[in-house]
Image (cartoon, rainbow, N blue to C red):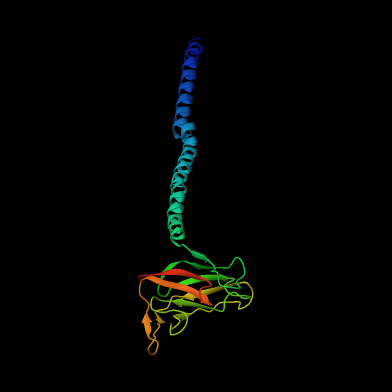
Length: 210
């Protein structure tokens, strides 16, 4: 009877002991298990988003600077275009000239060595001109005038012709009492492009300092 009583007393104690042992094992397992948290899992995504935001931020810098660069490039071009003027004069009243004749030079001012472009139209009967010359202050067309420098143009027939001419460093001056001198082309006014026959078409030109 006493042994049965002892067993009834020990059974609850063993049950409690087993429960405590099981609780200790579960606690140990929980302590050794890998920890996974929602904040840790979302952390790489947040890092990726932050990196994406950071990498995309500098892109706004060059794109916003691009219009400024384009404007700075365009400004000199507009200035150069405005500075390059042309001069044009209608044909004179020489007998036999067709209507609508003219002579044009672009630009109308340039230094020695620069290329200018000319257009002549109706500066002689049945042709653009009988001749085209670059004259300095001390040269002229006609007797003893020296003729300055000859300008080649094309075509030789028809109503209109064009020429590209390099402003020369020297030109042939006039002399009524001897050989024609070779004169230096100096900066200044007093130069012109003129056609033959004289008085048909002419336009003034300025030589700029080199």
